[in-house]
Image (cartoon, rainbow, N blue to C red):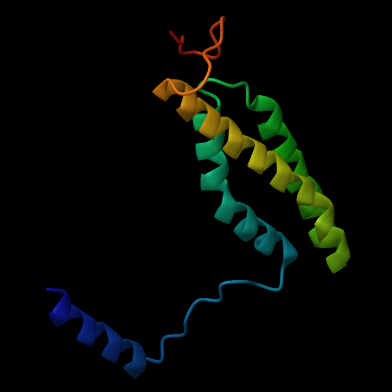
Length: 123
């Protein structure tokens, strides 16, 4: 099916001079949303998976604040002000470590805590 439809689609694109969509616009607000949406699935995964056995809501709040600081710096037009939101990368790295620790705990590797952590009780 693809062998039949792809040549027709490609020829129609060239025949009717269809322009490719512009990925990034000149409006800083659109670029900020593009950049935030690119990393959002990773953030949500690590926030959910890391929160099974750890309290990762503080790191999630730090990441959200860092995106607001990044957006404010990006919209100013000065490239140096974009780096002010870089502390969110440390929060995301902390979420990665929480996710690894949650996986380690669920697999039963390492020391086991004496108290239950999170919504799932450990043995």
